[in-house]
Image 1 (cartoon, rainbow, N blue to C red):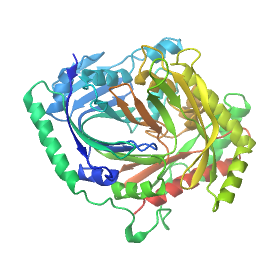
Image 2: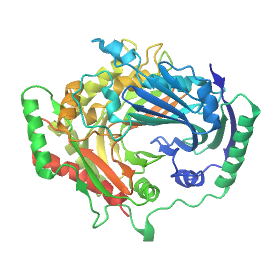
Image 3: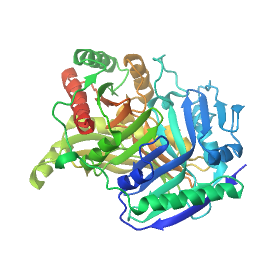
Image 4: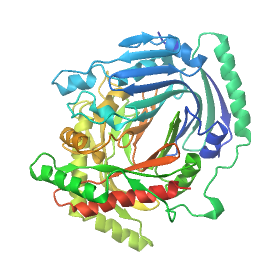
Length: 499
């Protein structure tokens, strides 16, 4: 049974600093988050009313307050195995069909999120009145696939929140504070009104966002300590073994990874430094009980936006090919030309475009999938990348959850062919990837979705940042160079994060 969400909203002056606003709304506490897209759209979750967590086929929906309990009470979810006022447990059976389409569209944990979002009907004109914000981990894509056994996970397959206090900042800077009531009676509306007034008061004089101390420029900090879970010799040996799989024709490319750990005593201050270092990327900060995930990713995972005959366009944007920015415009142009003429970079990129075409086709109307952009260059503060865009018109009857399931995980973090690469990685890597390589972002009740690939990110637990980095291995890869690449990627990020 749908409960029409009642949204109390107030416009705020343009020019709000997103990080300062996040701090003012309780930033850093469990159940809060900040998602900043390259187009300028910012979503700031000041409070959540429901938390959804998946492990394999089990999904727990937990109410975090009375507003969340009202939402759960109205939820008509599939596969419910236990129901309490403050919790629903759902259990999904692993699919047995050999047909990939049946596995994709059959019952799966993501459908619990669909039921949760369907339970709240946002009023017309309030596209963010009903929303999910969270992260899908790398192992969510293993649902329905035949993968080898792996060590026990230490991170959920997904964690998503339903915000009931949300600040939106549009690309042009217009800001609105939304407080949502999901309950059927006036006490829920009164609570939303109280939260709205408290939020407006907090945002009236937000503390300036904390940047780096003593005028220090963001960047690697001398003496930052970090240790990998896989030593250089062991990672080199892993790359050599995977090159044998490539030589045997099992895969064309594969992306092994390892985790580096370093100190991060203040995740929110670290995020402030990271925002300065990567101003053009997706940037995200998600706080839960026991962990914080923060990062600056250049890569879109899956987007669903208005457009096309059905009004919904699904997009995947593979990235492969990197050069540093030049010290002058002329040097920048020369580095771009070098990247565009690099045969290895081009071959890897085209493999990833093919993977994206296959993924998008799984949920698109026949004849609508196309490569909208091929081998364009996107420039960031420190690097430039080769980027392509693959789009398709979403088939009638499908939604954001189908698109997300079809496209996870992006080939950039797996390899090609995707399923065989995932099987080899599951067998080869010493620990599960957790959020690394998954997707973080939001899914709206109006059908839109925007997610980023979880790379250039840190999972912070107990004052330690876990930074995972990988390297794309092909037939001609040099194992030592791939080990050096993972270390360089992690070192740069850990240097920004460390105190």
